[in-house]
Image (cartoon, rainbow, N blue to C red; front, top):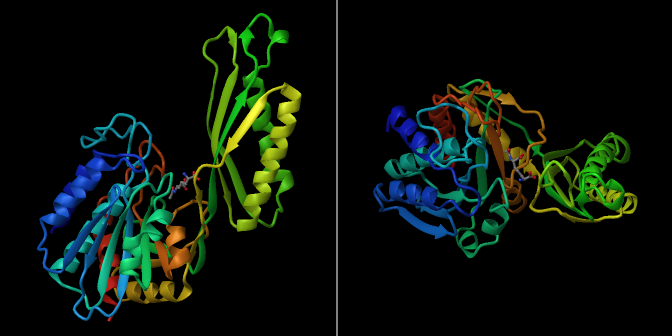
Length: 372
Ligand SMILES: CC(=O)N[C@@H](CCC[C@H](N)C(=O)O)C(=O)O
């Protein structure tokens, strides 16, 4: 396929973003495309809203796995693209439309020119949450295919097109979601002394939360705590009886995660006493760090050095990726693919350059063909 045909696939997928475990149209689109390929060395199996696609190699002594994520985000797209999301309030703002297109491109090449070794393409749901990787890793299908190595990519808006980047060891952080509810006695805005104001409670919590990283965490162990959403109240003249904050915790060291959670819970105890209210905390999805296998990264570097693509050493990032679970079970790595967008990941105007699709397909296929 020429690049403009891949651009069409990317744009088709861009129009149908769906959130974790609801990727029904996406799965259908992927299946329709995959079923249009010659099927002689292919086995396609559904797993919830994802897919396992096995390509039998010529020797077939071992299996290398390549994973793409397939879900979108609950963000209202503001790109103004003619191919913008058809799903109001949802957008492929993390590049999974690119990731899927590149996986389909690499799969097509594997079908047309079978590799020496088997390849397992994993189309994984729910990367943004609640997490599909850990469940897929534990699935019977994964046990059946039992890959000996695994890799994946993520688009990088800050890198130029034609560049990939990775590093041995830690690439992405450990993450935990954070959801906290505050409940108290609401009431008339004119009688604050008869109420427990949950806007005040949540606001006081947010201010104290900043001290978890600045005062409770070991400064030599990097961490981030961010609240991305806050909701409270019903109308301007009623004191809110309920407030909710939603956020994420990121740490480089797995043990810092527990300490930060303990710090949050201590602050919440204080908030309960001070505001005479109840709080409840839920840590949602927790992702294990992405820790790259040094040998696999070295091999990838060699493969890229023998191509027109440039390789850069990547810094560690506070991004999270449940691909880390696959790497906990199988040696492998993740790399960044340069897409040169003025807007970053999770931005409503993310605009990755489509020329990067071909670069991604080349990097992935070259890595797979290097398995002799
Ligand atoms: C690559 C990327 O942007 N990944 C997401 C993963 C989200 C994990 C989870 N929902 C959380 O917020 O902890 C990221 O936000 O880094």
